[in-house]
Image 1 (cartoon, rainbow, N blue to C red):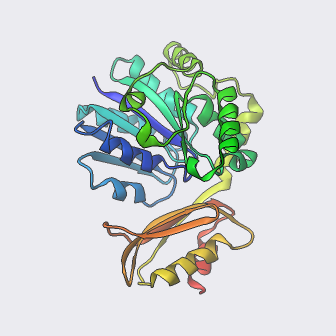
Image 2 (image 1 turned 90 degrees about the horizontal axis):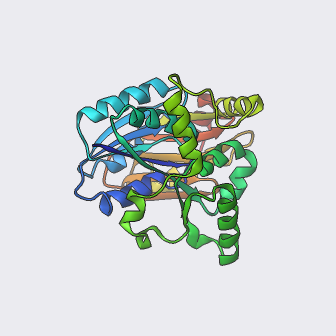
Length: 319
């Protein structure tokens, strides 16, 4: 029977990088279908994964836990008709893990698939800072994880790493926390293990209740409203780049967007043609990387707060 893995994490945490690692290791030689959920209207992650012998279904311009919930349910049903060994679900960075699991567990309770585990990827450098502003979302991604992995753990000192590990354990003592580099983690850790108590409770509720749960994991109305507010605040703007820039000029134009007053860019990603070939653009708060890439593209997507297409386009083109 088809098995399902969910890879969760905030914007820029490293979900796609983890999936690439799994395709090269634990899921190598397996028949894999990926359901990719991009918050913006550009399918960058799909382009990066096309080099692997897998099937990909992309659901973009929304979150599979809310606005694209029905689309996600239908995508899972379609995926099962291909009889893959594994379905990998990568929700957008703004998705609540608990809501994604409600849909996956319902499918399992119908006897159509086996849910293996939920993996949450956390950026060790930025988790505490992001949690100040998006606590409800990030706590949900921690509390409903069966396996918690840290990205960029090499960029923080051992004391900070230990303190972060203690916080995560206090939030979800049932989850397996692996703070080491991913290539040192045995393949079996990714593919089997016990479910946490939060997931088991959600499984029981999903099995008993015939309709989708109205955020029933202990949150009050205030928590629900905060989640809706988060989704309204976060926005995505996608720019199509037909003009060919030098890599240096492209970086400067992106910097004009990410540093502009009155808005906050949390994530930027894209594939753009430059005078030196195609470049992969990766921006996470305060850090921009523009690197050569073997696939083609002409778009950049910016995700954050206070963004409008008119403002972002003007900032990008004003250099």
